[in-house]
Image (cartoon, rainbow, N blue to C red; front, side, top):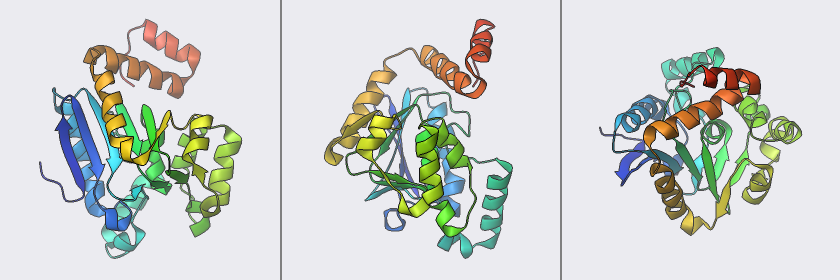
Length: 239
């Protein structure tokens, strides 16, 4: 498949999904939002792909919705608002039920809707200069999906500070690592190689085993400890 706003490719057993709107901070316009589900499904259906890496081109990782572009496309803006309001998002692997492990490599600023890709991934690496913020409140928007995801990855007080102070509060990569949002911080020049290395290590596992472990981990977050263990005992494998 061909894409206008994404780079989708395979490097050995690792599939790469790379945001490719660097001049717009890799923000999501209508085209990218339409291409993301296709890209995820293409990589998830490829038997040669054992792990998927998400990253961005240029200085930013992902800066959420491109409101300027969507303002010129009222139909797409209405559809985006509807999906957000109804919780019917189709942006991340978690939204789309992707079974393969997902590694996110945050190469720069991650803002607003970009946080979906971090909180919905299985393993997170970040460049040492990467930063995380949620500016919704600063522009009068109540978009709580990212905030809910953050509370599952960060202490509640830290998540609350980020979402309530908005554009005036940033979490740097080192602190994000200490708090558990990020698993590894590397020099920016080394980030993509590090992500490939981690993904290749994950890819060595039997895909059914890796998929089952991923499903069990996410089930625990979704349902809580007792319910997740009960479901696992009865052989449920879907997240």
